Image (cartoon, rainbow, N blue to C red; front, side):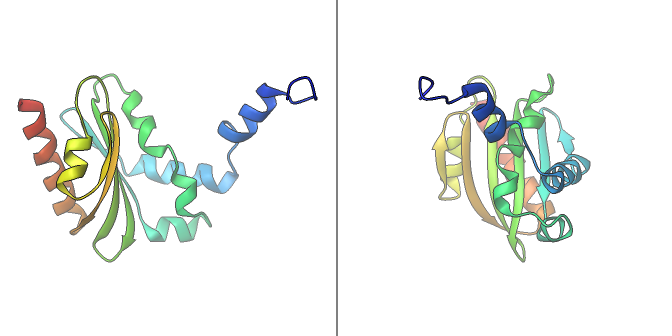
Length: 140
């Protein structure tokens, strides 16, 4: 492809480093929702946030990974509202913490450091349940 004129740097930039203004606004709204409990960070994307920023669920791709960059954070959890008291939960971890085990509890899946599931609960209960499962896993 390079011999035919493809420019890998330009392609990479367009795919991974170029966001619409609205996507960036959504990201800022997500950052405002951050809540850190011990070494776990929670963030939330509501349907209202998507509406107000004229974005879609696709625009949240990789948002869960950014809070994990904080040195004190071992697990990042993103709750994306899909319905009333329904959330798609994305989990990312560092090191040896296998978040796939947590996702499996809620009939989700993934792999060691990246997993997801769906959860039906109000947001405060959902955070509490996921935190309990993370803490239990950390103790093993």
